[in-house]
Image (tube, rainbow, N blue to C red; front, side, top):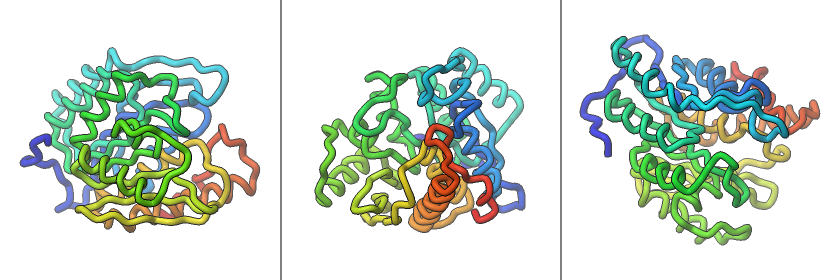
Length: 281
């Protein structure tokens, strides 16, 4: 574990918590930074983005213009050091190079944030994303060992634990997979994106206990739901709110956004309609 004996915290003042966020930026098709920044800000947390790559639109579109930010990231963080910046939290989402993961580890060692949430973006439906390779998977396993909160989907849970992916799982197998994640990550875990009998189920691990959060399916899963889920969890964590309650809050909010997106027939690639509901968070 990273030494956390020295913490940067604004909890004794009225200053909002400050969060560093390693995340991609896609100009079109709501995801990553364009979801996380407004959501976390609306929940009373100051967000300081660290772009990992800049894209014209997310990778679900046929044509993408992409600029990798890896060569600039360490200098970006070094400038924060020279300016005596401090941070209460770190949220890592899309990391597309092992050097970026190294920068994140260096950030943890130097700034010692109170809470570190890792959303290990690697794949879905049993497949790796095109930007992810085996080296990134292995590096994310190591980074996960520092996380206070880990939010993998089922595919990412299998990748982190070297578990073969399959379509059909028993309840016992889901719990075994969650325990395997707990052997990797010492913190709290929310394993997301599992659909059962017209419900979405999130498996929760906290302090040796397993529980579930079950939410009725409001429609097909939309692009960006994982970003929205992680954003709500990290904002609540920085306000020292219950992890289980936060998972329920995030799941219900996503269902609300999916239902409204379906009602207005918003294409899946364009992401969730969440803006009208920010005041409910």
